[in-house]
Image 1 (tube, rainbow, N blue to C red):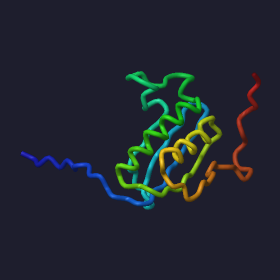
Image 2: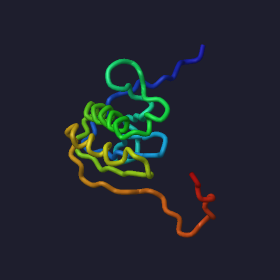
Image 3: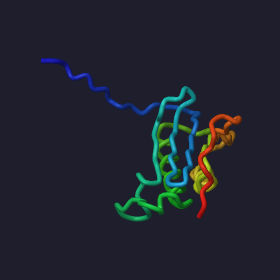
Image 4: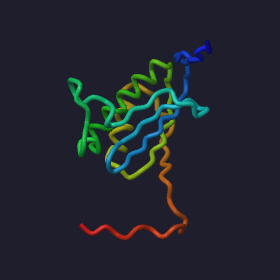
Length: 134
């Protein structure tokens, strides 16, 4: 019989972390990593429960600032369990949950060292899609 090589997940004690916020038009993804880039925890607006019970944010409610705030609160609490005190915030994308996620992280008691916008901008690369007419 072959040995089962399942790794047990352990809580690492990390003092400084990096929080990546990807705010799209449809969702907000928040990932907490250590300074080396290894993921500690993550949450999205569609994965955290809405206020109260087991219902999650679905459809158009995922793109709201409140959903991003709830995801950021969840990630901040999980990061505190790993021992994270100081964070750097890297925000990417044009979504509605950018500012509300950062304020939720600050309100959760994490000390923000820097906020950086890492949205990719083309230096006149590929031709963009046709303009949206509504």
